[in-house]
Length: 130
Image 1: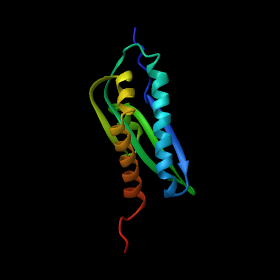
Image 2: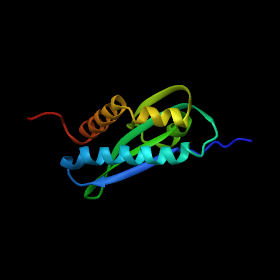
Image 3: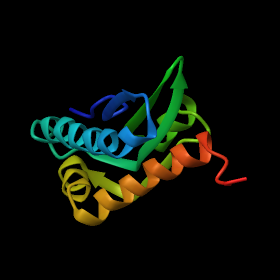
């Protein structure tokens, strides 16, 4: 009997209005993603997932921005997420407890913050002072 969870495994988003809030928003998204993943991995029965990725993107909705973080298998992501979503692949086969441990590492947190900021800057700024 399979106990595989439906995709996405983690689905969190948060709105913000200014770029000054972006770092706090990304930190909040990361903390909530870890919490969601820990609740799921504590009941998971050693199921394995292939081609997992952490997907990060920002969209503008009316007068605010919304940052997204989702953890899903690649085949799900290709049909559900925007083309410009950035992702960190978890190559090979992973159990949720292993993914949770990785997401909690300092290196992963730093990478997540950089990816989130990079996506915002590339999408909503010109990168030029002229």
